[in-house]
Image (cartoon, rainbow, N blue to C red; front, side, top):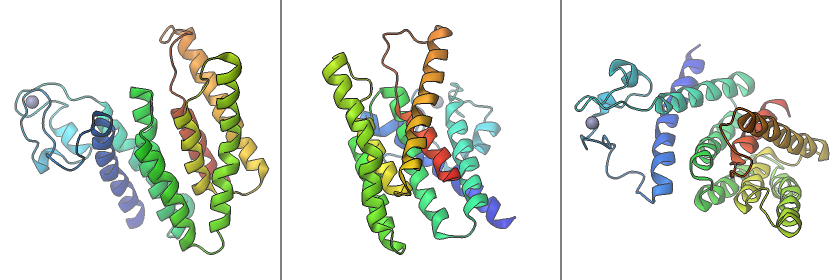
Length: 244
Ligand SMILES: [Zn+2]
């Protein structure tokens, strides 16, 4: 019970930091300075008003000083991160895998939300994802090669789709940022046979097709809108993390 609670709370706190990353990184702001402040009245947020999920509930979703509404997406990202961290602990228990996937998630979650909001993935996050996947493979026995092969085999089909859609359709079906993202994901998921790569790709495109067609159907997006692809790739990577 103790470790389940610790995993959940750790996830919520990391989720709280990931909110800062999602908000500040695309705006080229420093991640640690200055401390969080209300964007409307500039009131510095005290530590006791910055407790994941809890503070949002206590303050009833409003700034303590000016009572401006705080977006529900902040506590939602915290809760979501907490839940996925807990699921990882339940699946991988007290192990190196758990630590590795906690790190993996700390990149995937902000990448999905930044792409959703800004339609691009910061190179810094993609680069750090790939680098930490490869570095982590050095800690476990015999996984370095699988990490390198994983990053190339997973991303190669995406590179082809990127190249062909650019050349034939004269339109990007997915961005080069997505190709780099998949290289990073491959370095974490490791090469465990072509079958896994095939499932990963299929999942990404099936989830992507279902969600984007629904969005167009519900008239939330038009056919010409650029639709962020990273959220589907990330969802598919999360599923692979639990099934492979
Ligand atoms: Zn305020």
